[in-house]
Image (tube, rainbow, N blue to C red; front, side, top):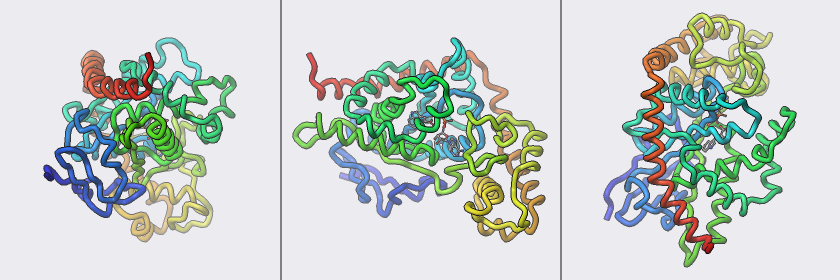
Amino acid sequence: MILARWEPERLTPLLHSTNPPSGNLYVKSEHYHLSYGVMNTDTRRPDSHQVGVPRAFSGIQPTGTPHLGNYLGAIRNWVELQTSTDGVYCIVDLHALSVPREPGEIRRATLETAKDLIACGIDLDRSTLFVQSQVREHTELAWHLQCVAAFGELRRMTQFKDKSESNEFVSTALFTYPALQAADIVLYDTDIVPVGDDQRQHIEFTRDVTGRFNARFGTDGTDVLVMPELRIPPVAARVMDLQHPENKMSKSADSPQGTVLLTDSEAEVAKKLKRAVTDNDGEVRFDPETKPGVSNLLTILGAVTGRQTVDLADDYTQYGPLKADTAEALIELLRPIQKRRDELDDGAVTAMLTAGADKARAVAEPVMERVRAAVDLL
Ligand code: AMP
Ligand code: TRP
């Protein structure tokens, strides 16, 4: 019996899948059947969450004010997905501890990040927003996934390679980080993981260890864990630094003039855009290889206005007006977010996170029970 039909076209056009849907998802009373073959019909445990709605899960580290890359590559897609998915969004404070921190630093940053997400439009009536350390099952499941993760595959992770080169102290947690990320995801029977392009390799790793865990511990052809699918936006999946357009915009890069923060004032946005690095040939054209700075501006303006970069390029003959229009579009984008953020109260947000962790635990505990039963210890 078909109870409902998921219409991919109602998913935001900003999002696409690595396997673009060619058909529809039919929700049956027993399980899902996905005609483009991403989800294994047997893996789904409909009892563990809202039947009929795919689950989206994603995470963000509480390590400073989110920037435009976080917003366009991830957060705004989470907001859009709220109309078509059961969204579970996690502030991954344990991940943030994989590099040295002061006591209290991450506690404060967690609350700030929660406010940022709520101000961006994460609606706590529709989505679950919670803090990773408040749901203990994440670390327990991470151990089980480490037991099926190969040393060699973790060693190949580019985020580990980059961070271990730039940090003086390289913790074991930085190395095993992707196993905790995989646990975050599969603990919620997640169908889709909306993230920016830099997370592609971690989600592929998640899929690999999920398959290996199921092969080892599934019985009678029944999988223990749901296989998640990567979801990268077709535009702005990798927003580049305005000063160093060959690098991605990043919280950890020391490039304040190249990074637009969601809290930046109008004057700061205008200044950063005005000084954005371009090139000397003077032609407005979308060509990320040879014109990374100009292409990044076109990408940002396109992502904010919903217009195609090629069409936008036709509208401009000079860099100045392109920069000015991009700044104006960003100021308009940020204004309501900043207004909402100013209205949020610490106590109320802390209580919302506590309620979010209760909701998250209600999903995570039975999944963890399923894993414990499959591993079968005394
Ligand atoms: P992080 O701040 O590293 O926790 O990242 C949170 C989310 O933002 C992840 O889904 C990232 O893929 C995404 N993200 C981070 N930087 C960028 C960027 N420069 N462009 C697009 N997405 C990004
Ligand atoms: N590693 C991600 C980042 O640095 C954050 C993250 C942790 C995450 N757990 C996750 C993202 C689970 C998606 C799903 O951006």
